[in-house]
Image (tube, rainbow, N blue to C red; front, side):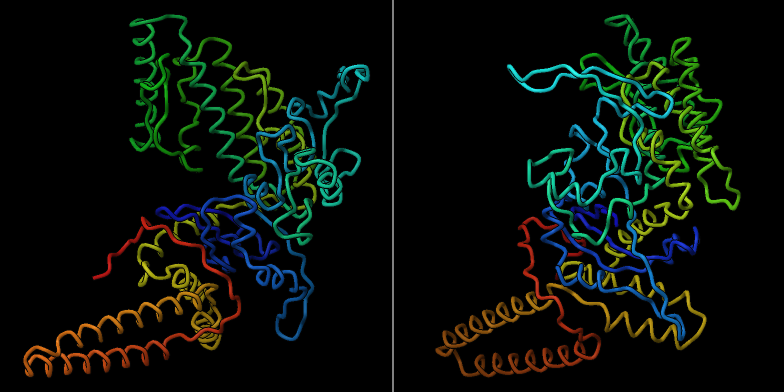
Length: 499
């Protein structure tokens, strides 16, 4: 489940695949689409309004799949980035005091791992009831109930007491369909966000020159020139640096977007750490980047599993990151690396949950939207049908391809089509009434013009009847989910203008 922006539309795409199939099943061409939903903004309540209860109940009802003559029981898990998990489970988000989606560790203690467990003094209560106590702060877990793991039971209890307690904001989007242990960390977004944080911290430190005025600006421009030369050698001119004119301190800002493979090309050993950073910070930043690259190599899809290696690398990375001097706190993704990443690796292969195929599928959705045959009316329906026609190419058996093509035309349903057809019929009736009124006003004119108008009206009616009969043969889906459509704004984007 992932959200993407197409034009000015927020689209949430939900698809399924087989985890046991490995990385090949995560490819974009092998994802089986379940639904495309347009939302005004991605949050729990708007998603709750957009996803029909019948759609969620259909997912809950699936307990077996049929392969030949065998019925095989299945377990449904959920994949996505951390922000998607916040929406799905009804959490308060990363700005709350408990930002992790897998545990209830306080934001001040996100850096704590197995190697850095400690005791700290805290103050509880107010006024006369105020007291100072010592508590033990240790590592957390995503499955061990004794280590602050999140659960639906705990969420229900917290919501009855107080909103946002332990980071719980509202009821989960899918009810009890998914538990917190059914959600797995996505290594692709982890890689993107952690590299973004490292680069941001390095630029922030490089922007501190200790000088002011023209001397400060000259140093900043020299560092920007070095960084841009490195960009041209590695990723080209699609990514570049310049002086942030909006900041009165004249800092270094980056422009463009580094995708996963571009980050690999950008953070190479020849990166000019020593030219933009000072002494020990440059050395520490190089160590942090190399430690994280070791983690990425270890979590790649491979048949070789080395027990304990990922945990050791994860703990070393968090330790080096905090000692580097780039920042004193850690982000939720870095907390997950230090506490939960190696736990996921113990129970399943992290490469099977990589979202690379989903991201590529989002690019495919953008292409399908702007090449859709009816973008102004209902593009999501056409996009979903085309996705199933793409799946048709995966079958070698002609009968299976025909079955998939038939499903693309008859098995894909539109939640709002019934309401759209009613509104269109109303608009047509208004047009017809206006047209009849115009004919009544024109009766005073010459007889030849009246005959011509009548003949033109007969021709238009015959053409409309022919178009309706052809459309009825192309697609006539079953009306399953009667849901009120969201009101559309007047400045709604259209990729093609009607003639």
